[in-house]
Length: 282
Image (cartoon, rainbow, N blue to C red; front, side, top):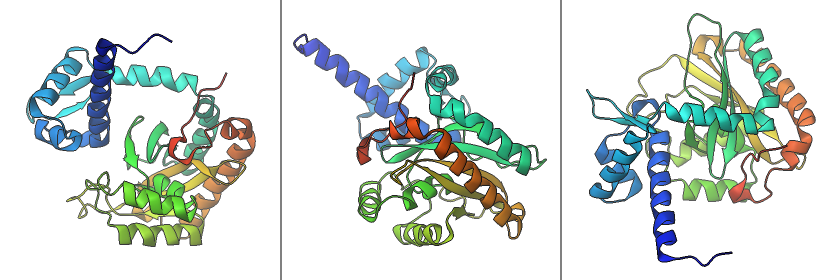
């Protein structure tokens, strides 16, 4: 291995800063972020953030809305994301399950996967029901516990891991209207019911927007640790009992089938709790 030079250290530092900015924008989702928001979330200087955003804009990785001046992940990232998706056998092999759920329920279905202490939306099949609830885009990243699929994963973790996540993700959860007490109550309900349910709008100051809900069921490795989840969203009336029971049964059955089908892939996922991510397979 070649010695690490000062130039290489500088390049690695710049790449690291770029990734911090992209992670912040990804978590900003469809709302986007102002320059001041990016500065606050990255804890970098305004001049540095402005320079990095300018470079990302020039290369199509970031876009800026002229009216609001907010920054968003660029469309070029979709192409890159599509290329990455093709490398992951897990995502490719799970697509038929998402399509079956979508065909049966007519509601939008997501596959989310755990990446360290976050979840990332890996795939989405839009439902056929005329009123759609689209809460995630492929590539969106959120802290563990935020959203039904994410909560299903968090609740399936061992107690000590849950405690660590709740402690370390406090800052990352600030854009979302869930305090620790609410999350603990949701964890208990998820464990008790065998599925996660959420009918609270995911973004702060938008809690008054009602009428939508999500249900999530964890996908586990052979040792019981969760690595992903199936997540379905719709208007609240379509998620109420007794229909909810049918949806949960469908998600649980598909999750069990996926666990059996993908057992070699799931077992290949990193054993380290803090670095558990979906690895590419041959």
